[in-house]
Length: 226
Image (tube, rainbow, N blue to C red; front, side, top):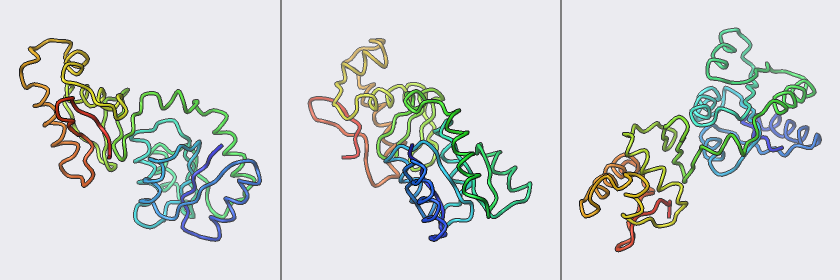
C-alpha cells in the first residue's frame, strides 16, 4: 500500500515514513501543498496524510482539491490544530479522519488500516477519471479541471474532450469524431468539428503554457502534452 505524506516538519516527516515503512507500507513525503498536488497527478496512492499548516497550499485546500476529482482515496488530516472548528472544516472538505498532534504512531496505524479496509478498490474508483498532464476529466460527474481549476464545458465540448482523452494520444480523424460524438447528425463536409476543437482550445489550452490539443495535418486531432 502506498501512502503520500504532506508534512513540512522534516524530523516528523522522516519518522512517520520510517514507521509506516516498518509496517509494510511505502511512504513518499512532500513538504508543500503545491508539490503534493503535482505529485498525485503523476503517481497513484492508496491513502493521503495531510498536515494543515504547510507552505504554498495548506492541507485543507489540498484536501478540497483532491476531492474535486477523487472521492474515494482516504484522507487523514494530522494537525496541531485541535479545536472543534478546525475538525469541522476538515470534515466539511470531505476528509475521512482527523488526528491531533502529538499522537502515538500506533494510533495512526490503526486509523490507516481501518480506512484501507473500507476503501473502494482503486481500479474501480479510477475508471471514470481521465488524466492527461494536469488535465483531469471526471466522466461520472461530467467535470473538467486543469491546474486544479474547474473548466466549464458544454455537453458537446465535454463529449469531444472525453473522446480525445480516451484515445490516449492517438490521432482521431474528423470522420471518427463525427461518428462517436455527433453520430453523423451533420454533414462531415461542414466545419463543425473544427469549430468545436477551437472552442476546446480556448478553454483548455489558451491560458496554459503546455498545449494539449494538437492537429495532425491531413489526419485529425490528438490530445497529448507533447
